[in-house]
Image (cartoon, rainbow, N blue to C red):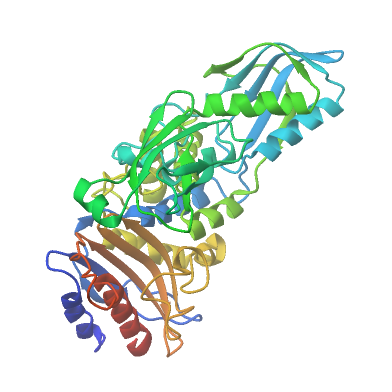
Length: 464
């Protein structure tokens, strides 16, 4: 047992009463040594807790093991060609999370370059790759209008997300919304600009209502500021959104089309005319891990289910496939609850011990998996670039870990590089975190969580 293990436990006094902490600190190792299964310090290791985005470690590992680094998503255009026209035209979507309007434009340019000037009949948008819900069970309903929780549908374009901002200067009574003119959604603002005191007295906040056909209303109130408030809107109807973009791009390409755009979940039978390929899975996983991209994670989760069971993917078969694939590597999820691939679902329950087992496997097989390189680095990149508590000179570049945060919880799973040139695997899961409101009359102090994180990692860096 490490002589400094006893220095970790007292740090919990930095956190508010009622906070749950679970952690495992593994045996230090070097680049020439194998990681040990032994823990030098642990607390509540078997307690089932909400993993949040540390769930993406499980998703990334499962995808690497089963889909492999070379896996690609194909978005294909099908149909029957006759001279300069095409009939029975169909887009087949497989959930490519990187597919963009530029990719759509390039597909239509290639279609036009092949001599096609007209589309006869309707255009079908095929989403048979997935079925079931586009959100995982247990995801918070009021997050669904925000881009980080956009739906994981087979049809994805521009991340199923629209960006804008809200102008709220003091000379206005009502806040005004800006979105680019080329975005085919409707946004209405009924937001009052009021003082902080009025906001508190009225129990008022900024809220959004989603209407059909990607129509949104912002209402409530906001305090004035010279800075515009950045906004992100999750597309609530991907088919309607894609249809508007498709019609605009067809007109731009001078391809005649007078039919309708319809949706289908049946198997595509016509020949491929144009095909678009995503970047390889290795690149997609790096983006998912560094940026904690929920859309990528849930699409990978469903895709694993689709490939493993050779049927339309969904959250149910994705969870079953993950369990079986990881069990084949000696990694049991038997006592854990797996609801999605992103960690957005509050139904997920994973222990620190399970996370530590996953981490050990990733470290031991890093030559083949190359997953450690995808994790954020404290003060350097990804979700740890500006992580409070880890931005000191002593800790910058020393913590390499996957983050996981939701309301009331904060998790980290990864390795710490110490002053003795050791690497220390760790799992840290903090939940039930509910600090007292900050007293506006007192100087601003680091939050209890920031203080705890700094003390936890400083102890490891200095003494392990």
